[in-house]
Image (cartoon, rainbow, N blue to C red; front, side, top):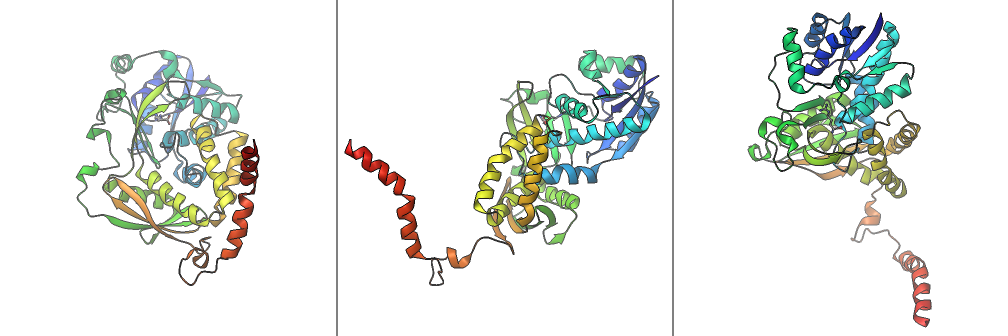
Length: 396
Ligand code: ARG
């Protein structure tokens, strides 16, 4: 019998996908990949077997996710369309990789995901799978069966499937260590503001009772290694930053986004850890990156974010860009002090042993070592082309 490895989340769609794939003549191996989403993945995976999977397993990919996906995203200050920290886009390539690993191990000839035909995630999975394992058949049951939400529920009811009866979220949510994506339901109307029940990681800024605080974030070669004066692994630094910033109601994004398939969609995110760390990291770069490198990096940042958003993780350009960013991060070591206010997070101080800021050059006091005579000559030469041009123009 043909065997398929299914990316299984424990939600309605991928649960129904198990008996559906079985009815198409497949043995289903269900894989739940832990990228830091909440909930009991072990219990969900156990349910997959009662749904008819021949095998079900949970794979803890959190450490790998941090190392291979989140640290590069932070190094790039990665934001799609200047605002979205790529939460869901970052997890798909890794999940694709896990699916391929399990397929190789179990001798499966196909892999399956539960994405619909309208989103970006199908693109990310399938382009990724095509690069990693072009020989594997890729199935997209949810896209192919053409069932509405109501029909899917009815399918499960008729067969008495043990679907998790946890609170039926009015939204479509995807969460991992980098944040939370919230779409659908009432949010489909861009003129309807998000209701409090959309958020889990951030409190309403209007409801922050606390006084502003200052939090120091430590980076070593672009990697976060301390928050609030405590040393952390990168994964714990992300978690600690998320808790603090979320409690101040920082990290919400509400935007109209351009999807790969061409439609505009209303997207709501909360990513307190990602957005606070990016603010701190970008600030430290302003202190430690040489001017021309910094300028080129800023030019490339949206290029990287676009590639990742559009599902081109496994592309030579992404690899080459990541080699560039790795070199750039060698000098991104130091501390940034963030000030958190209700709904806000501002860098207010920074220091580094490898700071390029030089007091003696910058100061306006009598400690000044900057050569003002050099400046006069420099300005004359700098303006030479413009002076020459203006002279010729004036002659006409
Ligand atoms: N629009 C976002 C993206 O493409 C979020 C996707 C969230 N996925 C989901 N299944 N709810 O990255």
